[in-house]
Length: 250
Image 1 (cartoon, one colour):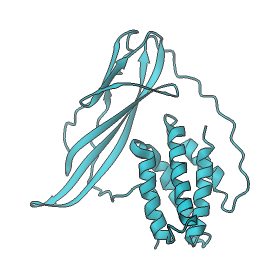
Image 2 (cartoon, one colour):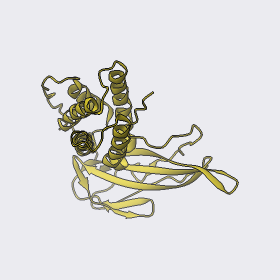
Image 3 (cartoon, helix red, strand yellow):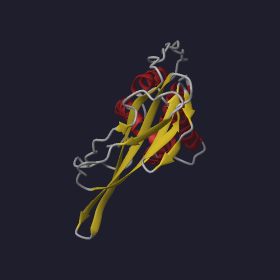
C-alpha cells in the first residue's frame, strides 16, 4: 500500500503529549509609546518523554511582519504611537525521546502554533477582511487547482498564508520538474522527496498547514486508488495542479 505523507516525516506516538502553554503579556491593551513584552507560560507538568522545547515568534501588523527583539523564550518591540490591533504567533517545537535504560529508542518532535491579538492603545476592533474574488482556473486533467485553492483558504490561517503558499507551490513545482528531468522516476521516491521539500517550505508554520496537507493527502490517495495516478509522471502532473492552486492565493 502506497504511503502518502506530504509534510509529516516522523511518526508521532500517542503518548507524546503537548504541554499546555499560552502567550503572556497581551492580556490587556498596551499603552501607546510603551514596550510590548511577550513570553510564553511555563510548563507546569512536563509530559512523559519530554526533553526540551524551542520557540519561533512572528508578529504581524496587518499583512506586514514586524521586526522584534528576542530574549530567552520571549520577544519585545515598540508599541508605536498609533492605536491598532496586531497579531502575535509563536511556534513551539517540543522534543521527545523514548529511552530504554541508557538507550534512546525513538526521537520525535511536535510543533504547535499559538496566536493572540496584541491591542495597542484603544482597541480599534478587528480589521475588516474583504473577501477577494475567487480566481478562475482552466480545465486540467485532475481538476485540482480550485480544490487546492479552496482548501488552503479554509484550512490555513490568514497570517503568513500567502508567503507560505508560494513556498509550498515552488516545492511541488520543483518535484514535478525533477520527474520531468528524469532525476526522480519512482513514485515512492517522489513522495519521500516531496515530504522533505514541503517540510522545508512550511518551516515553523508546519502545524498551521497540517490540516490542509491531511485533506490533500486524502484527495491524492483517492486518485491513486482509482488508478487515475499510477506513474511518477501522473503524480508530477497532479503536483503542477496543486502548485497552480496555491499560487492563486492572494
